[in-house]
Length: 488
Image 1 (cartoon, one colour):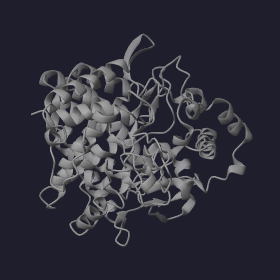
Image 2 (tube, rainbow, N blue to C red; image 1 turned 90 degrees about the vertical axis):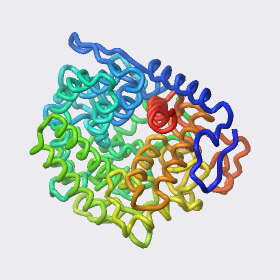
Image 3 (cartoon, rainbow, N blue to C red; image 1 turned 90 degrees about the horizontal axis):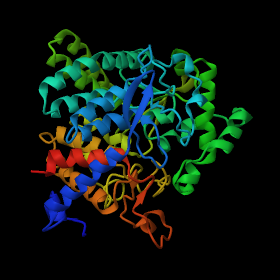
């Protein structure tokens, strides 16, 4: 299969000539089988929950933003499964509104850290074990998507009424604890909350987490029980020192009894995350629209205002010289910009937070073949960055999830930039082709096997896909993109 490298907006039919429809249909069916395969039925206190795990190779629990995205794929062939997926996601929602980043399945011990490592038992609801942190709030967006694409509108309306209280509690939780200044930008307290766990964005912040001050018991636990670097390729995974820091933060927060006011104020890791904030703005738009659908207009106005506030705050983080948006390190009283060139800088497109002045410069950065417009865009770190690593988790590879965010973002600007729609079309095609060629993996080589060119290292037999196989959100994103943009 030959890659279309023309500058004009390609179609999947050009990329895959002759048998395009049958190929796409076959791949979609395979994606559906993966989602069915990754479904796990879990019983808690007499209730049965249907959860889709990311991959049975390692990620054997339910992840927050994974499941919100998985539901977007499920609704196209099994709407009831989409409803059940999101119901399961909120089954362990804390009394304070937190939807944790992991909802644990009992008797599954493969993934590290296990549920007991978080020491959150006092907060578990309905006997459902969870972690103590969250992830980018895709939940409201997923609910809106499932509602809009459900063939049975009566069932969809009942589902929406069931979901709205959980969404509102989650958003109120985030506003209270993660934006105590009421300025619009969200504070994360662990890199795992960003979704981009191992990104170069966090290097300078993790430097505040002194390895010498992490308890020896935490380090020994990592040494004894961490397995991702044994099951997966060690060169693709976060380093041992980073895992000490990851778990050191968890130990610290547990000792503070998961008091988020204290954590945000005192933690050595507290960052105003541009990616999280962009999704937060987009999620509040979704919540406002969902409330309007049920006639709750006054409440809808509040969340629309929250979205507007965040958009303005995001625009204020723009670095004109670097042509990117910046995270802000606010840990322990700091206020320092983080300007690492990563995928996060393009997610404000999805929030429609990019101003008309910033837009052409951001598009210029996106389409530069020396930074982000690679043979298989969009790399999670710019390929000319000294921190780019072709295969390491969130430090280089292309991820379907962030591609989806950028596609949707570009389409919001199709009437404001002459290239926006064309770039979205090209990105849809390259994302689909990437998965057709390389199967449904966690993430992919953005250079199409040309790592020796970008990394200045010889790669004799390049691997084009990385991470774990039969990955749920890659399959779900394929289904969603195909059904909406390429099926007809």
